Every structure is written in structure tokens, then in C-alpha cells.
Length: 91
Image: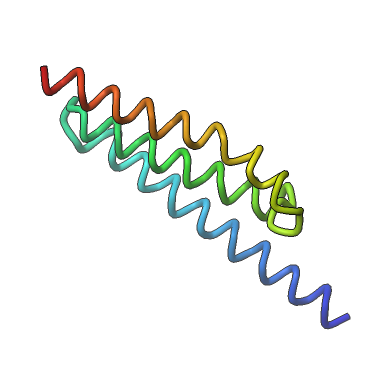
């Protein structure tokens, strides 16, 4: 029974984190001007939410290293996209 209670608390905590990240996304989208930093913030918030979902709800935190590596590959693509967006603005 204690294990079930701990998991429930953990899922509620993760839900709260995802809710806070969603509120931050809405604030960034509505309050910041249309600049590269706005888009970078939105991408980082979206990647953070995706990581939370993958780690806890898809149980990737319990998987072996190679599966985590496969899951992280799209995140490296997102970082690469951010670098490219920044580079285009700097031109």
C-alpha cells in the first residue's frame, strides 16, 4: 500500500510540474515579443515537458542506458535546431 501511495504522490508531483511548464509556455507565448529568444524559450519548455513525460509516464528512467540514448537523440536535434535558429538571426 505504501508503494502505491508513493507512486500516486510522484505522479501528482509530475503532473504539477507539467502544469507549471504549460503555464510558463502560455506566459512566454503571450507576453514576450516575437524574437528568437521567445522561440528558444518555447522550444526549451516543450523539450522539458517531453522529457518529463518520457522519463516518468513512459518509464524511461527505469530503462537501460542504450534505450535512454535512443530517446535522447531527438533532443540533440532540438539543440541543433536552436543553434541554427540563433545563427540565422546573427547573420
